[in-house]
Amino acid sequence: MNNAIKQNLSFTLIELLVVTPIRKRLRRFIRGRSDSSFTLVELLIVIGILAVLTTAVILAINPLEYLKQARDTTRISDLDSIDK
Image (cartoon, rainbow, N blue to C red; front, side):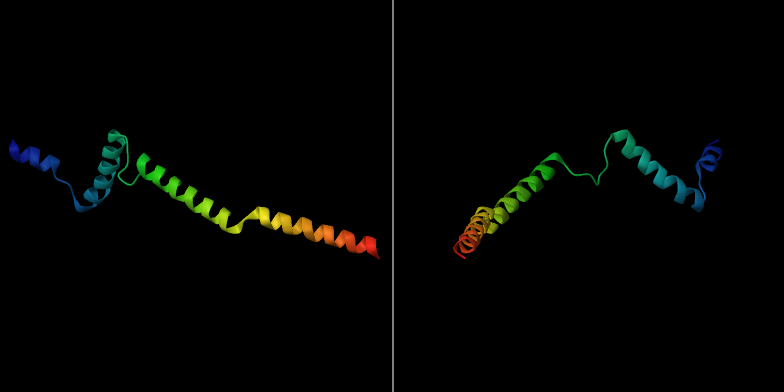
């Protein structure tokens, strides 16, 4: 009887190649998560790093200074056109 059970449980190479990935996916589905997913802590760390980098870039560019220069250029141009 043991031989009959072993014979029924044996797989061919093709069956193993097809069944093994299905079993892995089924196990992941039952566990409710994938091994390749990110944790909440990892996502929060990445968001924090992006926030720091964004702040550094904005401070380096200093958009208010460019707006002041644009307004001053417009004023100088207007004054030059009034004088002529």
